[in-house]
Image (cartoon, rainbow, N blue to C red; front, side, top):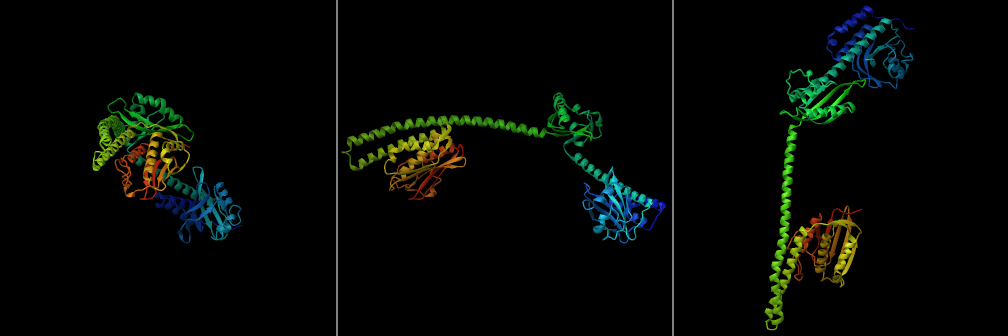
Length: 554
């Protein structure tokens, strides 16, 4: 048995306890200063080598040393940790004892597992550890470590050690309270500074607490006693009905409600607010209080009203402009037909008289006059085509769209039948059209491809032999057509102009055209929400494209 060693009696231990309680370090309320005083006094009066305060991690996984006093060196750097998985017997003993008194810690069943990794390297022979209990839960330990011969711990030693655990528990409780209080003060400052109303109400609806913004929102002075008011005292008939039939039942059943309401409804001080309300319960599930956050929506509602007014004005303007555009389109169509009729009447006269002049007096006319007659007839024919193209151009812009599923292969087949007389000559035609059903305006698409094919035949007629290729390819949710020929081509510098009205493709001077065909293509493509473009080089292959970016059915 180890020798009996006592360094202090009960009188000394009581004086030590009074010394700790009266010290400036303990009165400072600073946790580490308090613990520093505790471990120093305990080491001096107990006559042990070291005393440390260790805190238990959340979940009881480990003990971390917060503060330690070494009799030879004074307060020393802490930071060591003991793992619960590594020392299960020691941790179990702490949880079930007021004090763990191991006279021979190297052989004691509760502490022997700590010999190799901790006790022997530190030359520790005896341990007297007091668990720190707070609110019925072990939160740490005050550890007294003796170096030298095994020491038998007396009852007064164990009692004093328990007192050190109590001091540590008080300091930890105070530190916890300070943290909670600091958090509460921070939260209170935040709530007081927020521009929204934040209030707490009892289950019967009476106000308990409210921030300054809430008082201003309700028209209450800063020093007004709010406990005599209920939430319904600031509501109108409709919102009170909403409170009784929707808000309160939702709070009691779901625990929360969000929406909009009206304060002081039906008065000149009516105020629209957004509401976030919560029901809070105690640990037993009983309703304890309600919290509510209200935000003034006056400015937001004014903006919404302004936006709604602007939208209504915009819709009215759009309707007026749409109506004006429809009227303009009808007038344009009427004008086009009128111009067509008015221009064609004298044009037919010019063409008829020119034909009669060529038939009846051709032999009597000198050769130069006969050329003039031929030029008059050619110009009349060109003018007639131009009038027809202008009419077609005006129709494509006002014609009603008729979107329906269209078999692209069948559409191309019908188009080629239409051009069969021109294609029966020495034209080499290749078609490579992938199958597909395209939601499109069939007449508009046919017009685009008809003009492309007509151009290809016209500009490749001098090639030997003329070659035309028609392709159709799926492009994601859309479809792309391409019509290529080996005709005269054109310089890509003119690309952006060839789809403009009255602009003719550069050619050798022998082809005829009004300069409207490709412009008509562009307008038809625009109405189909598609795009057109071309790739060419003078004297080489020319390809015209049309792509409708959506509408392809799976």
